[in-house]
Amino acid sequence: MKRFVTMLSLCAALAGLPLPAHAAEIPAIPTEHRRGAEQTYLTFPEWFLVHSPAEYAHFIKDRNASEFPYWGHIGQFWDSYGMVTRATKDKYPLNMGYHVMVSVIGTSTTVEYAAKSGYETMVGRLSEATRSHGMTAEDRLAADVAQDYVEFIRHTPWYKYDFLGKLKALWTDTGLTGPDMIRKWERKYALTTEYTVKAAYGWLIGKATAAGYEAPSLETYVVLDHAPDALPTSLTKLRIVETGADGTVLASLPRYQEFTDYAAALAGAGVGFRDIAGNRDRIVVSLITPEGWTASQTSHLMMAQPILTEPGTVRQVLDIGIDDLSPALRAWQADRVTVEHIYDF
Image (cartoon, rainbow, N blue to C red; front, side):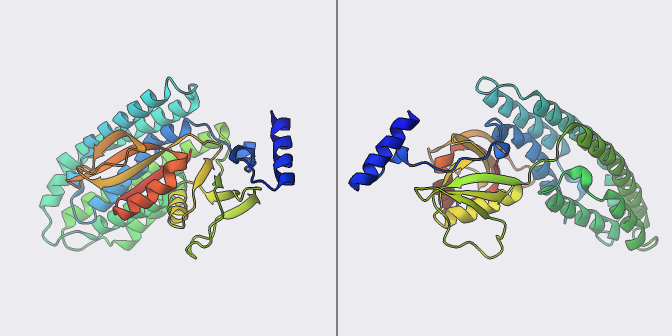
């Protein structure tokens, strides 16, 4: 078949005719940069454990930690895991290693959120009631650390976060005396316990991960239908690797959260995707939308989760054809819908 396509292309070129679309060879994703098609689904519950801390960090900027819906987030995590399990079980081979990993981090988060819910309800709420001067320095530090942690885990594994450095800051930057002493010292106790436990657990997970897994690639290779004319000057990590005979290009984009930013910029520049990490079928995207908003028929709604701290706001989890991704991103931008994340396998 390949010999036939080559002869057809040669004859067409000699006759001055345009090449048939299927005869033009597009660049291939290198084997080492291909990832399983099921990964775009399975990474959603893993990324929920980024979205949830992000919601928590936003919440405690000006609201009490005791009011955060910890149990609601536990339920949403396990609902999302069930959703992706159903979506992949009959279509793809079982990825046991990834299921084990998601189960471990999900169980860890369940234990953490359940413990925080109990403590904040019984102890934290009492200390909140003693305040008469608003948030203490410890409350503000906790909010700053929560936001810093979210920014960190969007591109780096959580267990590499410097919890011990934040523990030191808790005791050196907030002072030992001041207004609302009961709340100050209760927060020092709570945050000391949290940061110490997470530092120790993170150290153990880091050692286990290094022993059992190779370091993940920080690149996602894609095939674009053409090279972009220009991108925002802040997006400097796009690298053109190869240009095909038909003008398609093999390019390297940064992975994880940055992939979402680059994909949106490429779509805005009129560039389309032909292949992402060796996959040409479907990719999962999550959107933050007003309640009642519906996506176009080119996408399939897999799950809708209410944003528990923002009534009237919904996380919609969709899968969409890779060829349809760029037009959909442009349509969502026009609708002022927030693209939370594109799950790049």
